[in-house]
Image (cartoon, rainbow, N blue to C red; front, side, top):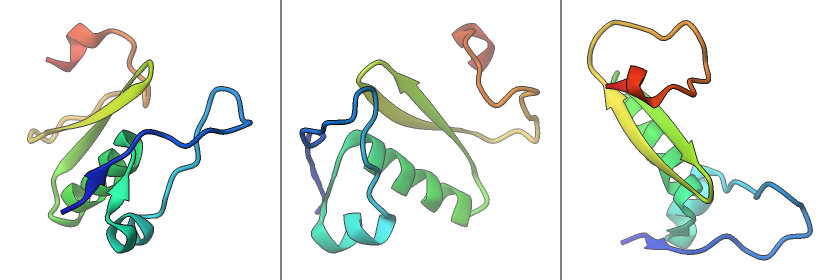
Length: 82
């Protein structure tokens, strides 16, 4: 089991350190961003198309199954994702 943890205190404003997947698996803990990126890499490994969604203070994962791609790498209009 992998435990969800809050981000560590940091002197960096507006960001956080991202753990490598191997570190998350070895220590069995990670932040929402660490876990989102780990699961995104798992989806990529099985040829699914991950979608990393970032909102203030949180991230989560989705995926799409159609062979359709967004023109932009960042999408601010959330209605275009449905």
